[in-house]
Length: 95
Length: 510
Image (cartoon, rainbow over all chains, first blue to last red; front, side):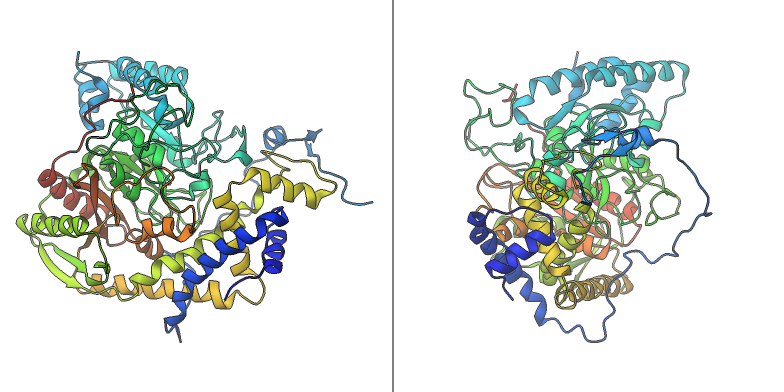
């Protein structure tokens, strides 16, 4: 499978990465080189094989459903590019 | 006085205990070495005051006889580990001046055991790369040069900034290129690193250092910037096998904050260094004899076989029929997980923000400006293979192939094989700018021998084993059973003793 220019733009948008039209052909070539490389997997017979879901078989760890931390709003917003009164500030979302 | 930076981690530990020098002297010697080596660009942040404060505390503890296992030993920390109050960027512009309010579990255990932090080490952006060239701070220079090469002796050397060094220098490998270069250039006694497809073992091999990626789940991933969560593992890069054993004991252990970290006692790895390997069965996978394999690499591999045989190990030819599918499967699984992990960089909660007309444009511009080319490419591949209509053909198939790769190893270990011996890399270090500019896959092929280990979640160690005809170090890799790092340390020590050490002799950058 290979991607066309329209697919590159669609994937860029899905990835939330702005791509200039001028950069599309180069990106298309690079993505197709990678997709071409992974084509090799098509020769493997995977009939009846379970996909790997856990690298090391182990019982899922659980903990008590209780609050273990909190009251650190100032630490949470400390690295935000824009914040006010412990809220993250974003461009207007709803008109 | 002898140069304290030339000591191994364990010799420095013993020297401190014997009061031959103080932790403060040891820290000062390293701080000076780091300052003189800025042209290598191994450190992206130096923390000398922090180091001296920790060293003073260590001196007090040493005086009171309360020394921890790493008391007073200066280390470098890969910039992928969150360090409380100390800038952590994953060498990406998107994390800009991110200062964590928390400490990664692995690094917190190093401080618990008395270690001293010299600073944060360069790496490929978000650990995506095999040459350290994708770092937002610029490439790291390998302290090794080709035989007869005197590049870097120009007037601009030591100017301090990335790119200030002249000539055709070599890459240190990646993604833990800063860690490997710093260890090889004696800019720390050992370093933390991470390995998703070979990022500990390949740079260790390129710089004549030792590096071990432990079993998946052995070290906590909490507080380490995530790349591909089912593949990422932390581990040390050190000057010797023994140094890595000591480091890993402190780094490993169960952490309730990482659901994939395994609740299993951490052995005294150092005790396995020097243990006899007599009677051990070493598998040699025939699929690793790639067509067109570099003759020097092949000869080194044979040399490794002979050394282990001489130490009493039994050599057995084995088959890993799906090994050749590991790298293509990796380039589906790793980008898929990365595209999901890196969704958090949205310009809202931390890091860079580029303004946009609306929130979507803000996201798109922020991520275009904040991520480098390789990271953008991998996010897009990951997004594509997970997108509706393609998931089964790519991601699901790759995860099935991964099951087959793991089964290959299980079958081999069920036959009684104790470890598998392979080359660590298909070549020695290459030049900066030499690979991957036309086709990204050319760069990916660096990890052809190491990536299988991540796909199967196994432990793997790279040990320097010789020099090539250009005078550059080459490494061998040993792959172990799950949670049997001890066997790797025992076998690694045999190779180290037979091959000798490969220190960089000339400090041409200083």
